[in-house]
Length: 591
Image (cartoon, rainbow, N blue to C red; front, side, top):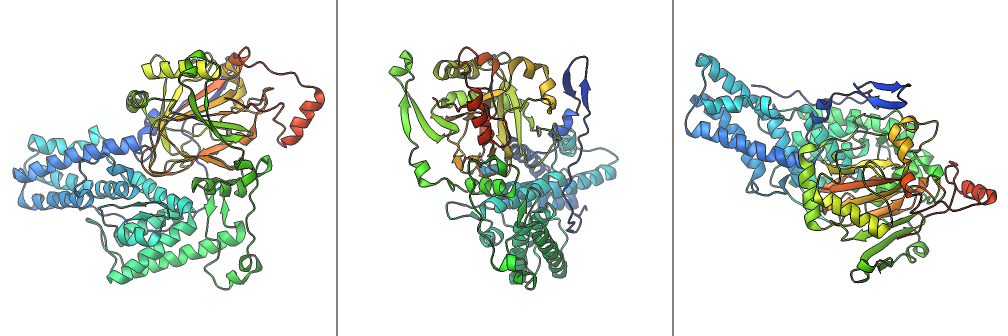
């Protein structure tokens, strides 16, 4: 029988691993290529809810095969007992939700099912291999099919289970769900919503989740979960474990917590409560350290808006996280100027059916076009994209092509020829917004993305930031098409909890609503970069988030939206507004 290694805590500094692919700059061709192993993008399933749903259906089929092996007595009595334990473990997790399409939209359901397979499937394989050896290498056809699962399908392992565990701790780091009800009852609960599950969370499971989060420097949230697990163990009088897991001594858990608290206080004292690579609670566990002046009377964080100086700072991250929780950071005198309207833009067609538009921000201009994508179009785009999804990669200097949990999603690309829905959507964008958005000539293809467990995309620019310092300036398509002038993000699904699109420098957030499309301008009217449009996708708490992006390039818009004329003085004034010296003109302000 296989067993899982004893939980261990390894505290380490976060480092970025280089990609296996090699970046090549070919001077003669004047563009960049990157070689990489495409199978590397298929190793994990927690990065896409769609993959998790498919895994759920696959596991159901194999469980039915295992049940049939037991019922038809195709193996020995001892083997039937081992196989029966696997089936019982599955049924405890699923309960009566075997036909519930949203079962894998709850992170705890995902964790329990992946742990069940990651730990238990090895038992099935060992059992059938033993039967095979006792029968001279012969097995019934159904047994052979079950034994060959790894050859046909991805069987989750340690990487998947660790990814899910870290994702759950990340959700607590962002949304501060109630750790007591989570550990004791398996319930995700905040002041705004509540999500229950069938599966029980053992002390071992809760501790594993907390430890893995702590290993990733999510120290405050990881330790909170571990402490609740310890309380549960004391109440139960033992360290409860799931099937196939060996029992642990309570002393092991206490020692792990002691070590984690020490590291927590060291990082808090040296780095503060949050950086890009760590997070802690605001007060140390060590009572003597807590008496320090900076902890005894901590400073209240100040909201800083419309200021590029906070980019990549702890302030930007904190504002990003507050927006994810649904806290609008702008003062009332700014919010009071926002409005909704019906807009026809003097187009004859839209005189009879104007579009619903919600103004999210006036400067920079961000608007939501409600009901811009029809339900049937959303379904068609998702259907066409599902078979092609691959793990999303990081983009930017020193990050290009890397895989990182700052971006947890899978994506693919569609042209207007791939689906009637994308053809109609492009025509709608062109006619209503006065843009040229056809793929490959005027804009990029439709990027379709499905977020995974705790799926997110940390704060980033959409614009390529083409200048001599960036390699993207040498790519042929960028030279031909120009930078990303406008971003159009369409929501193809509703999201039960989390998953907001947020603008930390603006202080605004947008909740995903199926059929809505968000537009903002990445460049100003004179072709400069508007750095205030930095944005991020918040972790998905409950549900499945599908989006499609259309990035409209600048050069093809020269007749639709010609550059205005500015004096040298005006341009200097614009640059004084932007300390990064990227803005050169006024803001767009439509539709």
